[in-house]
Image (cartoon, rainbow, N blue to C red; front, top):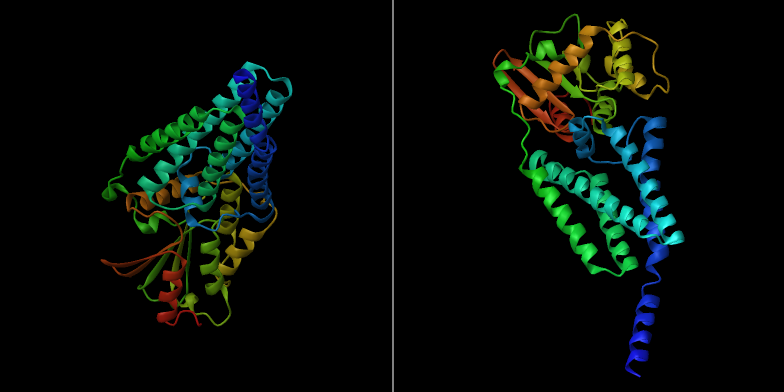
Length: 333
């Protein structure tokens, strides 16, 4: 009688966890779908669905680039779903072991990335947070499917350890005195014929930053007065397609045009210009990024207003820049 009761209890427990099997399928596919949508939006519209500046900042520190990082996550989640599908279908120990290794590896990678993001550069990225939560859900469901609480404890331990490792690593600091002057960091320079020596505006931006676009939209409007000054445009993009767009802007005669309007047009253009990337453009972008990192800036847009030879005002983010321009009457409400 005792054995029969034990068997019934085991069967009840298996039945009670049966809902976790389809939910794990759904969680894996939904996570992959989210990254897939972001990739499509990037390719068609040139921007990410992530609304936070932290997403762009994290991408700047990743060697393979922000878009390639998203692509890697998309491919990985699809591969993980396939391994789980085959493990459920054929119930082989080595397949279940492979799924376990993939999930633990993903948690280790994500933990180190999140640790670096929150403890080193200290900028929140909404997409990174959503991916981390998705991995937690996947881990919990996998532990239920395998009926092993130890898997959940192991996964969380690895994620925390990865976060601690990523948090204690500090990027090598660059001596600010060794970085180039702002004048040498600008890829595009524009000045009104009657502009005075001061103030000069230095605008750090990215072609994939919606906050940068917001600032330029204000400056490109008719009736705005930014064209009464000297502007130094400092893009931080290193992707070959972005460099071609910057090179095309450098080749244009912007003397009688609104440079903000032309940059916005190039930014939204669906096709990449067929131009050669000058060798000196790579050097200029490298100098700009060196200046940006050496001075502790964490995200674009950054606007530096050079009021005189030794007087500067730094405006971080879109709202601070827009408010300053409003206060100075350079743009209207």
